Image (cartoon, rainbow over all chains, first blue to last red; front, top):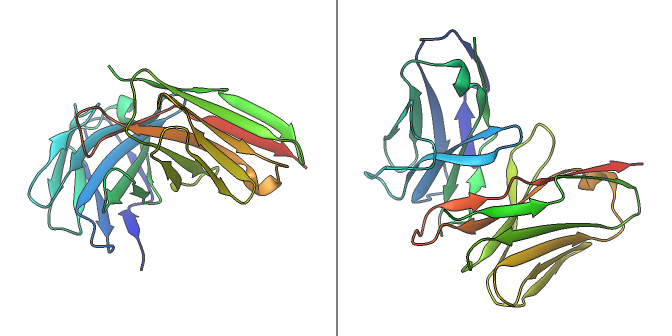
Length: 111
Length: 112
């Protein structure tokens, strides 16, 4: 099992560009999450999906959209990237909330 | 809102010394979880504590959940260089079955 996978690993964007971060899990977990991690700020929840077909806002949803494509995949979209969105993004999944299993992360730099 | 605070923010030790990090919640928690993140890596789940006063051990790591279920600690005996990383505690957001509130973590560095 690969666990939770994320693509891309690294990305550089210019302000105003859009991109989608992909996440997939092969553990048959119902719930999936997107976090961002910034120095000194810990992990902050952006969006989560309790089950296939549902999504809900977390602590810092502004500037992001998500899609739960199926049970395995949960994507995060930045429509118009801003320098404040420079961060490390982690996807996570869980079978018995809220114990979570994290992917390797995407390092995003917005210039 | 619910807050989970961790102290210290940083801790540097000599290899072989003990280390403790403390976690305090502003509200009573149904459970508390601990995660470890190696430098450049991702958070990895270590353990979950559920019962008041619970103590669990994993080799040199000892986890405690306070009697009032508002605080927790992680103690590492005789640290090794492999213990380097940031240790996070996390508690469920009140009223949610799905959301966690993470502490900001304690960064442990070990001098060999």
